[in-house]
Image 1: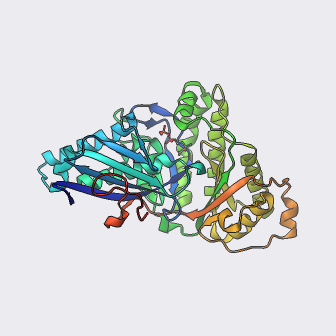
Image 2: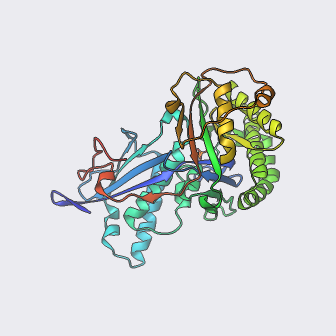
Image 3: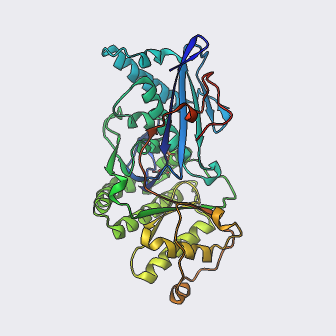
Length: 404
Ligand code: DP6
């Protein structure tokens, strides 16, 4: 809390992670509450490489709610933003009527200012809305002193956002109640339980903008019979197997299920009418490369997954990373300087054997991959303390430069 002239301003800054599903969420049974047709499971990525930072501020002096995203003021009347703001204010009010009159929640009737930035380029095509909504809800909960279950609020911003409220390996339960109170996220295992697991994000050059997840899954629910089969007969078993694979650190099963589930999600997209294509030529080459690589070694050492775009996310174990990365350099030669081509966690150099290069029968695609982000599983959202980290000043307006 700080004095701004005569008015007090409360500021809270938090960060939240991106998550990448290994069992995909695709399709809603309730579009307003954002309730899925199937459960899903994801890995929360480390915030050292990918994170959203959000500052929320409230003051009696603010005239109206306002929001700035990645340096630009946006319309706060967006229905999904409004759902999150209303829900968190409702919880804060509930807390007050339960008898808590601490000063931080007395300010919850004041107008809000929100400022949010990503530390990764929007062009990376990563689902930034998941980290964004998780961060917003987490920061508002801190501001109003609301404790407890927040995933059902983040879910109403963007379905996949509910999984970004936890670190490590996270499932989003299907739930069965019409009001969605049991469609929540929960941690399956912390990131520390599988420290050897590593992640590469292969940022592929996309020529055209693809269909957004929200409208894509709407058309899939309306037209795809495969989606229904997937939700009823495939995902429940896969969730069970995936949880077991994670708890036993069984990469064979984890990797195989991850690839099969990504493939089935893209098959549902093709089964949608009119069909939706998210994978491009480079995505297909990456798929072939991974299978050739695993075949060469006679086991699943590397797995791919693709969301609603052509970028690949690769899961592997630390020991296989140097060789696979070297292979990517061979198949996707780049003119970009090495330190810009591979960003994030360092990977040691490796030599490729003649047998391996012979077994990989793929014609190189120069510049097919723009750059790679090397990362691992990481923790959930957290509050960052200290005025330097706030993205908003005590006047409630975005700072020119913040220490994020
Ligand atoms: C392919 O969570 O972005 O990434 O709920 O409409 O906001 P809305 O959709 P969104 O969909 C994510 C789809 C996916 C799979 C996944 O993350 O599970």
